[in-house]
Image (cartoon, rainbow, N blue to C red; front, side, top):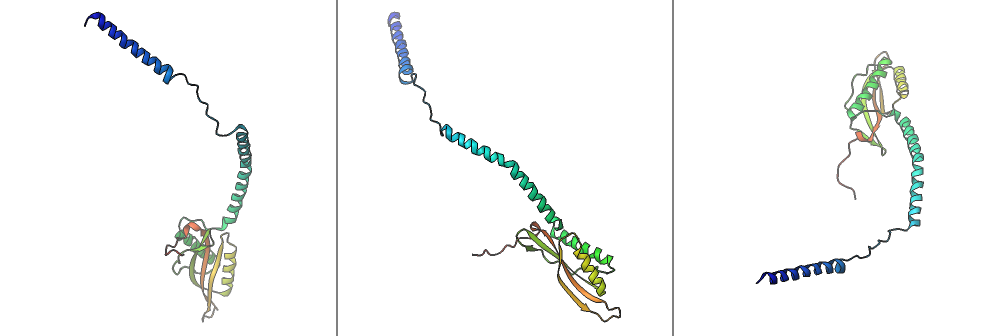
Length: 196
C-alpha cells in the first residue's frame, strides 16, 4: 500500500461518513414541521371556568362572616360547659361548686360518694356527675338548690333523696347527684362488639 492509495481510501471513507451524516441530518432527522398540540379545552370553556371560579371566590368573604357569627353564637351557648382537660378535673369543678354553695348556705357538704364515669350526652357533649351526702335544714336545702340554679355553668340535679331525721332541729339527710355538661372529648369511647 502506498501513500496515494491510503489517502484515496481515507478520502472515500471520509466522504462516505459525510454523506451518511448528510442523509441522516436532512433525510431521516430533517427539519420536520413542529406539531402543534391541540389545547385541552377551548377558549370559551376556559372563560366559563374562570367566571365560575371568580363567582366562588366572591362568596368567600360572606362565608367567612357567617362562620364568625356562628362561632360567636356557639361560644355564647357553650359558656356553661365545664372547661377541663379531663373528666376528673370537671368532677373536681363540680365538687368545688357544691362546697362553695353549701358553705354559703351554712351546710357542711364535705364528702363525695365516689365519682361515676362520664356518660355521653347527645352527639357532641358529655355529662359528668358527683354524688354528695349532707345534713341540713329544709330551708337550707331550698336555698342551696336555688343557688345551684343561679350558677353560670350548665348544672342539673339528676337525683335527690331527702330523708327525714329524728333530731330536734328538723334537719334532713340529703343525697344529691349533681351533673354538669362537658365536651364530648372527655367521655371515653366504648369499645365492644360491633353491631350489625
